[in-house]
Every structure is written in structure tokens, then in C-alpha cells.
Image (cartoon, rainbow, N blue to C red; front, top):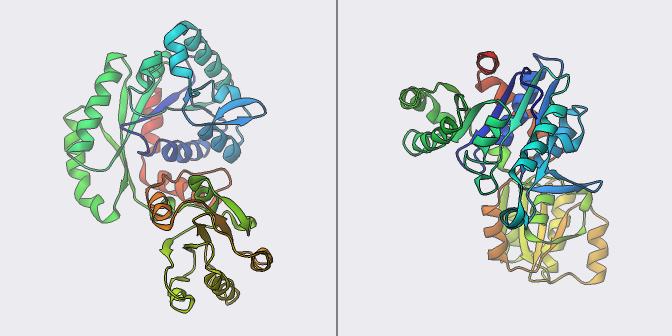
Length: 367
């Protein structure tokens, strides 16, 4: 049973995956903490989780907890983790009343003594429908109004917003407005009036336009290692270095030096010891690259490996060939991780400066 229907709350939904729910939630919590002493958070349904002391906790919940330390039990902020067999098990013998009760109980704890609560969804309005906990239904259960986060644009994005709005309306969830995310700064002035006109046809205000910032898309060496299923064979202490550019080195070591830019990633066959030594030499000259990926399951000889391990350059060994490595890195989704202090600060600034926080608060309080 939902005991708390008083504390102001807002549900953050999106039109699709990776549109910016977590970025918006992360920045919104910071902005609200400037206005309220205690701000709670909950992600009722999590699809990507980690094990924390035997509990399956959504990754975004861990990020919020590590960043803001709201003093709430992790299980209250992340009551449902969708494991690989979760959906099939639910279709076989699931109990919608049990899931609903779990979410309500968690919210009651997450909202206890809080002055505002941010509820982060898990995708578009329909995600979770197969086990009776769609985002729209969940927002309804928690008596929350919603915000829709979408990619920037006028045609396709507003069409997608309309589809999401229809499901929220089905569950009688008021949508208080829209945030357009990842818009090129040069396009914002031209986009804004047309986005406002298009959204007005749906009865929705534009709450803000968040500009695209390339820094948020730069992966760390650790994220690349995880994406490739590789392992650090040297320089793991530098795993938080960010990658600004990616280069495949197939030429001589002398010619490869043109790629040794600050924060660059070099992809090279693991037996190209000449390039490995050239990288180490260049790094000593203050041309600090982000790191190196050694491909084809090949690794340098032990004496070269010892030299590598005496330096602070991250080296990752992988089984894939160079083109596959470059393609995977280019296509990877870069998430914000706990400890990404530079990115978190940037996100906080982007949300505070580009979203009408006071309008969100005012609309959340209105009946």
C-alpha cells in the first residue's frame, strides 16, 4: 500500500533508451538539493544491475547513492532488478500484486522524511508492460507526475513523445513537460520555437533543451576494457583516463607517432613491440595518451612486459582484431559511473543551467 501521497515527486521517463534519463535524474537531484534539505531517489525497475553485498542493485541507483549519499537503504532505491530469466519466470507464475506491493513498500521507505523524490524510469512509457510494471503504470502506482526526456528535433521526437504521452494518459499520469537532450548548441536557437509549437499541439510545455556535450561521450579505459571483454596487463591504475580519439596503428613505429596525441587510444597488434616501446617513450615526453589496446590475443615478450608494467600507461589485451575493436568502441554507449567526478560536475551544470527546475517543482506540487 502506498502510504505516502504527500511528498512532492517526479517520474523521469524517456522516449527510448539512452535519451538521457539518468543524466537528467543525476543533475536534477543536485539542483533539487540546492532548494531542499532532503531529496530522495528511487528507480523502481532496473534492467542493468550489480551485486552489492548480496543485493541486486540497479547501476544508476549505485551511481546516485555514491554521488549524493542520500542515506537511504539501497534496496529501497532499487526494489526490482530484471534478471535474465525474470520475464519468463513472471509469465509462468508471476504475481502483479506482489510486484506492486514491493514497489510501494520501497517508495514509502525512499520517501520517508524527504522533501522531494526523484523517480527514475527504465525507458519509454511502455517498458515493463510484459510484467505489468510499465513506466506509465509505475508512475500511476506511485501517484507521480512525469517528465518525458527525448532526443532533440521536431518531427520524429515529437511523434515519439505523442506515443509515450498516450500511455501515460491511459494510466491518468499527468505529464508536466518535456526535456530535449543532446541538441547541438548551434541548433538550439532555431529548434526552440518549433519544438515549443509542436509540443503545444500535445498540450505540453518545453522544460528545457540540454546541449550536446562531447565530453559526456568519452569512455574511460576501464569502460573500454569491459566493453571488449579484455584485461589490463599493465597500467591499471590509469583506468579512469578518458579517451578522446581512437587510432589503429598499422605502420612503422616512427610513423605511428603522429597518433600519440593527449588522451588518444592506440589499437595495435600485441606483437608490435616496436610501437609499444615508442608509446612508452612518447609518454615520458609528457604526451600522455589514454592507453593502448593490444589485439589478436597477442602479448609482448616477458622482458617488454616488465618494462610496460614499470610505466603508468594502461595496456589492455583482447582477443579481437583491430577493426572489430575500433567498431565496438565507436558504437559503445558511455554511461556515467560512480567516481566520474568531472562528468558528474558537468552534468550538474548542464541540467541546472538548461532546465527550468522551479517550473518542475511548481508543477509537482499542483493538484
